[in-house]
Length: 293
Image (cartoon, rainbow, N blue to C red; front, side):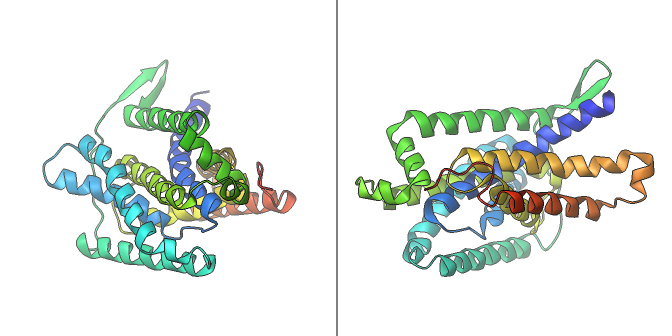
């Protein structure tokens, strides 16, 4: 029973991070038709912002509050100066985002000297329910994701600007024909997606430490989540990210079973995630939820 509860808790914590990463990527991909191959580096920038605050003697939590704003501004500048000029050629836009991501990653690598840096959790310690111990910081991550996703959903469904974004997600051509200014939506949405990635990087860095390659592993898993959930809605990738977020620690926990641990290595457990997603996409190519016409 204790093992099951801890597994569920680990799944919730990892899924919360994945939801934040994937939400930003999905909004950009669905609205603009461009997969941001530099999205993982937005995660890295969020983590690096926290590192700078911590190194300057400022509270870690202050860096976590600043990270989404800093990364959103950076994303806005990238969309305005580079991506906006390439919407007519999505493949070139994707390559541009890859190049930008590479520049960011290698710049951070040079700034931190290729080292790994540990960041203390703002909320340390654990609490117990019965015989099971829970990390306070992982609990805070779960609550943060719930609050942010709830706020995002309310914004997209209850405000005029949010409804324009949602309409453009589900039917971009109709939105443009209705007089919606897609240029403003694109700028805001790219910045919004970058902010979510920056927030994810900020809150995950105490768990995974800072390295230049921090965002790479999450980028691959984020693409799997978008493929699984489907492009064209806000909810689809969220469902996909929750499922991928459940599979990653879930398959790793298989190694806790004595007779299975000899056959399932950590790398093979990650391969199982790819296999499961590919099978699901083969059965349902449009994704689990896809309303695009």
